[in-house]
Each structure stands twice: as structure tokens, then as C-alpha cells.
Length: 249
Ligand SMILES: [Zn+2]
Ligand SMILES: [Zn+2]
Image 1 (cartoon, helix red, strand yellow):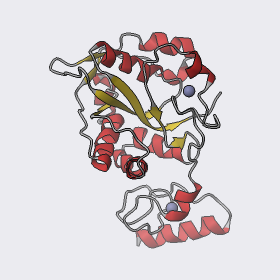
Image 2 (image 1 turned 30 degrees about the vertical axis):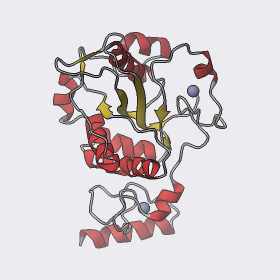
Image 3 (image 1 turned 90 degrees about the vertical axis):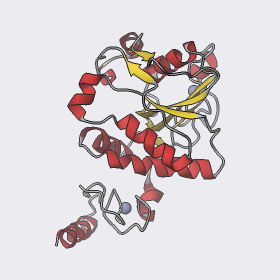
């Protein structure tokens, strides 16, 4: 019955030219996360997949969108960058932004599978230099209690299943709660994150090539601070694998 109602809703929305995306409030096997149409074994149906905002021609170092595949000004000016290579398959725009918000704030960690599909595709196509371990950006324990799950850990597990690279969830810890980065300007973001991360007691990353996992990279202050903690502990290379990046402000 519910399926019939939703089918009708999809048809009505299509007839009135309304966007069909994200009326699916449950993850039903065999149906598209975005529009509820049948999608076989894929989390997204083919028409939706074709319309998603891919991150085309990004900076090959930091994945900033619209760089004509050239290294961006910020990366050219950076001496000894904390992050070696950033991968971001999507732009942070509609409907990918909505998928990320659903995953993060509306208790739908299963949507991590949507982004794992992109990483599976990139790995299959040989477009990723594969790290030895995937390490999620940790939440502070207060935030974790509030939300009930860490979306970055969900992503790390899903990317691990998609690429065969082990995810080590408890390598990094968040030493203190930080203010939400979204309300801060660029220099404040860096200050806000300074000294926020440390390795856990038994973690050993010496000589390792690692990839940090997070949902969105905006200025990169959080990811760079985490990368610095890993490099101080002896990691040889730290990449970042995220779902999406916004374009230049
Ligand atoms: Zn769809
Ligand atoms: Zn760049």
C-alpha cells in the first residue's frame, strides 16, 4: 500500500514538473535512494545517477571543483601540504547535499552505501591510489552520544566493503569538543581545530599510507589537522576520501 502511494506521489510530482528526489524516507532494497524508482541492486537508479553533480575537472591535489584539471592557486602556494591527495567524487550541491544531510542528521547512516558505490567505481576503473588503511574523522564523545553514530565511521566501513581496504575506526580520537565549522570563517576554522586530534594508545601508523574519511571537505581545516596528527605519528602519506566538495566561494 505504501509503495503504491509513493509511486503515485512520484508520478504526480513528475507530472507537475516537481523534483522527484528524496521523497524516499526508507532504504528499501531494490529501490532508488533518491526517487524510489526500481534500481535493481544499485542504491540509485540510472536516470538519477546520470543527473548527479559529479566533481568534474577538479584540482588533482585538493579536489576543488572547476579547476580544469590544473593544480589550484592554494595548492600551488602550499609548502609541504598536510594532505597528499583529496578525492571527492561529487560536488556539494543538490541532491548530493541533501543525501549527506539525511545521512548525518536524520539517522540514515545506511546512505553511506550511496557514496561507497562511487568509490567502488573509482577503484574498479583504477583511478585511485589505494592506501593501506581507511581512518574516519572521529566525533567527540559528547556529539557521538547525541547523534548515536559517527557518519564518517559509517562511510569508512562502507568504503572498506567497496574497496577491500581495512577500516581502522579507533586510530584517531577527538581530544576536545569543537564549535561547528560551518559558522566560522577560514582562519577561525584552523584555530578551532588546532590540537583537536591525537592517536589512540595502541595505534601505530609509522610508515603507513592512510586515507582519512569524512563526508564533506570545505576549507579542509578538520581533515588537515587530523592529517597533521597522523604525520606527527609517522604516517608516510595521508590522503582524504570524502563524498563531496563545494566549489569556490
Ligand atoms: Zn532515482
Ligand atoms: Zn588544490
